[in-house]
Amino acid sequence: RKEVEQDPGPFNVPEGATVAFNCTYSNSASQSFFWYRQDCRKEPKLLMSVYSSGNEDGRFTAQLNRASQYISLLIRDSKLSDSATYLCVVSGSARQLTFGSGTQLTVLP
Amino acid sequence: NAGVTQTPKFRVLKTGQSMTLLCAQDMNHEYMYWYRQDPGMGLRLIHYSVGEGTTAKGEVPDGYNVSRLKKQNFLLGLESAAPSQTSVYFCASSSGTQLNTEAFFGQGTRLTVV
Image 1 (cartoon, rainbow over the protein chains, first blue to last red):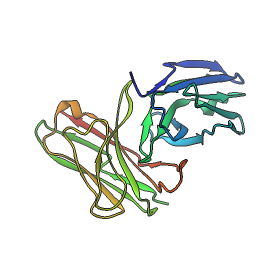
Image 2 (image 1 turned 90 degrees about the horizontal axis):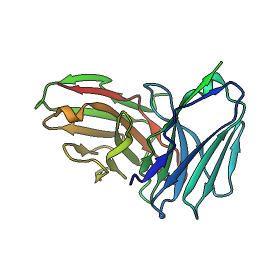
Image 3 (image 1 turned 60 degrees about the vertical axis):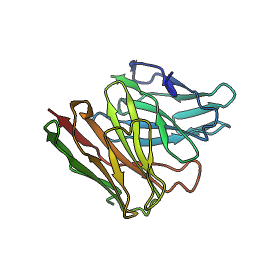
Image 4 (image 1 turned 45 degrees about the vertical axis):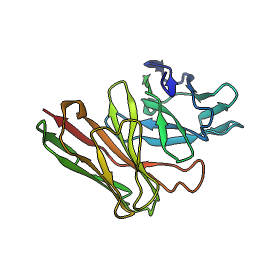
């Protein structure tokens, strides 16, 4: 079993739609949680950290459920520029990042 | 604003050849990482370092060696390249001082082993 599992995707949604990505992790000792975004053939970049209380950044909302070892990302009012691969990431005590395989999102005009 | 710089950006190797990938960061970060990314596999950790002079194995270390002689540099070596090492390699660094510390990535090295 992979340490971080994500929805396989791809997700193709129209502009303005709301889309949700889910992720589960297997290591209960994981300490930090993130969503990274990766554009085609580019390096990953931090989208947002994920906190137990849930957090929001504009159109993006992230949730963490430690008991279920579940992380989610909600994107509201999708834009064409949101098209990318979204990577669920967890971190351990040595700060090494473990990545999910990623979920590809395409926002259609 | 250099951030994390990887060299080279592209390389084609013949099976059995050796090479070194260089990662340099100018943010005074303690932690540095080497990942490889293959289609459908996500990024997998090869080796990492929590400070100058230290290295540790990640998820897929076989066939690779690393060195961190200077804080700003993290080198990844392939002693005898194999076609299975064809991949995109990403270096990353982070300060590691807080739990939710952001990791910054280089632009990647696209390596093909023929």
